[in-house]
Image (tube, rainbow, N blue to C red):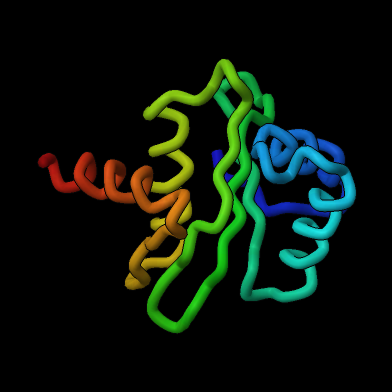
Length: 120
């Protein structure tokens, strides 16, 4: 289930983002969070599993006709297509009419999700 980021989820969000190798240093991780939180056009979403545990995070940038998936991170045991594609589908549903796009890092995942959506 897609959950909007709130300040009381800060430690959870930072814990999930700490799985991203370039965000390992605490200062870099804090800088990334602050960058997203400074603008409403850069929302952060958490992903909950069926047991109500937070298992993933998606950091986005919303434009006029697109949603750019800047960061995706999941707990090591939940890095499955089902969980990742579930998060991407929920973000896509939240922004109907906008195209999901990825960065150089996230585009392969977005492309695989899109293929799955279209049955290719």
